[in-house]
Length: 182
Image 1: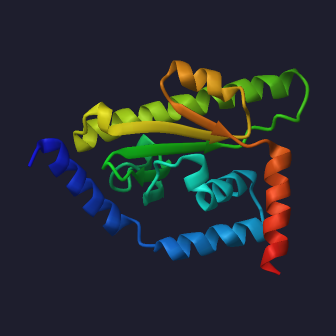
Image 2: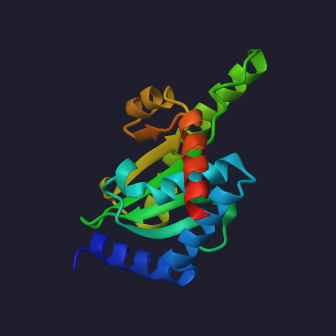
Image 3: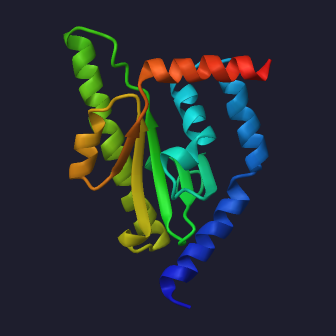
């Protein structure tokens, strides 16, 4: 067995022990968020989780949600989603709700900061995963999901897959999904 396969096996076993919720429990949580949103970022994460195959078709098996790369060391950051692909690679997905409707200089600076942060965050997490778990960088793909289409250009230059949903589309989906639950 190659070292990379061995390391991947150890990582998957680790994930199964630290992610105590079942996929069904996580799905129930996200469906609840849609009905009672109290945080825009969680609403965006709910949309992503409930539509993952349409947004990032390579994502096959959720390994971690809102967990650090190893142990309880949140000082190295927490990854929003870690998925396994059918080809046994890892996809790190970071989300960021960016208020594209707000106007003014302060809001423009805040948006720019958030655009840079989401790209930097997923890149640093990849480095941390590679260092700690001894993954070859080619085993890990990075992705971001935001409410801002302009993140795509920044992501592309960093070789990061980027998808987005317009805020109005997100709210329309939430409204439709909430009505279907009644």
